[in-house]
Amino acid sequence: MQLITTCSSFLLLILNLAVVHGNCSNTLASTLIQNQLILLEKLVNVLDNVSKYRCCSTSPVVFHAVISSSRTYDKGSPWIYDQVVTNVGNAYNPSTGKFTVPTKGIYQFNWYTLNAPETLSHAGLYVNGYIKARQAANNNGSTKQWITAGSSMALPLNKGDVVYIKDINYKVQLFGQWTAFGGVLIN
Ligand SMILES: *[C@@H]1O[C@H](CO)[C@@H](O)[C@H](O)[C@H]1NC(C)=O
Ligand SMILES: *[C@@H]1O[C@H](CO)[C@@H](O)[C@H](O)[C@H]1NC(C)=O
Ligand SMILES: *[C@@H]1O[C@H](CO)[C@@H](O)[C@H](O)[C@H]1NC(C)=O
Image (cartoon, rainbow, N blue to C red):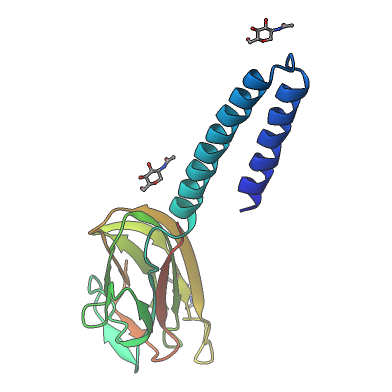
């Protein structure tokens, strides 16, 4: 809206200057004003369309889910965050752990992992089976080591792409409630 207001003021200024510097023929001045008004209307329409496209043309998509109770996953098995906190757009499947992109766009993902003390986890973010980002939580220092690893990344994705988390290297022991996966369509 700010942009539209600024551009409208600018056009009105041009319109006034055209009248002042014209030869004062009423016909010419009124033709100029009419043309300028048509232009102004067109510009406002275009800007209106642009702002609609930028902010509100797609439905919101956001999900966040946690692993409900402590669980072990083999290397290569997608982690299933079975307890849904939010799932606007319903694109995250809590039975498979997979998020299927509903509309082309830029998505921001985040994932947090707490694995058992004296164990390791290397959670990879995968898109259609290809790794895009890595995370390490090496809690093998002592029986008292309880450190949550957190990672995040933004990705341009196409409709139908499948996004999930699995361990790159290890069989893992994950803690319920402290291990989470989320994403949001940001553009
Ligand atoms: C003013 O503009 C009109 C329309 O173009 C033209 O016919 C007329 O000769 C112009 N007059 C002067 C003084 O330039
Ligand atoms: C604005 O968008 C509408 C609907 O998509 C379209 O019909 C119209 O031609 C557009 N206007 C301009 C000036 O781009
Ligand atoms: C933790 O595991 C890594 C990878 O296997 C190993 O390099 C490291 O020495 C281990 N650290 C401790 C304190 O056991």
